[in-house]
Length: 97
Image 1 (cartoon, rainbow, N blue to C red):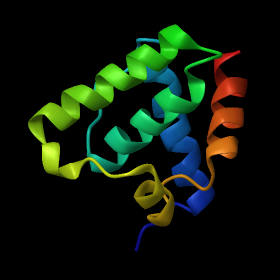
Image 2 (tube, rainbow, N blue to C red; image 1 turned 90 degrees about the vertical axis):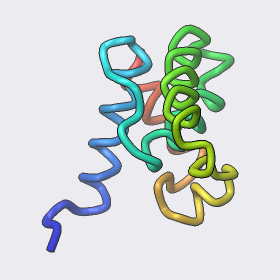
Image 3 (cartoon, rainbow, N blue to C red; image 1 turned 60 degrees about the horizontal axis):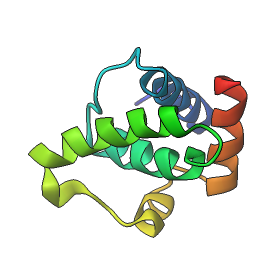
Image 4 (cartoon, rainbow, N blue to C red; image 1 turned 120 degrees about the vertical axis):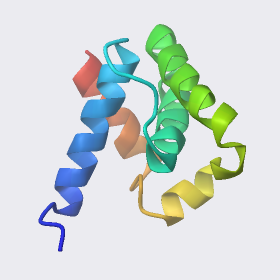
């Protein structure tokens, strides 16, 4: 059984998003990361355009190899990979500011 809580998983994913946004992380490692990076890129576009571009590129690289794994935003939310778009934006804004 995985000992990580939902909050731990969210924190780890936000850390990965911030690293990729700053250009210090690799491309997405799995379907969950790729879809969350794509959503993060969308919610950060206006406030952090360069970081948004980095996240979008990381997701696009993954989806180029796995095109059938890209999900609609609503499916990412339904899967629980992101609790809400405002929460994602606010948490990443804090980490990138």
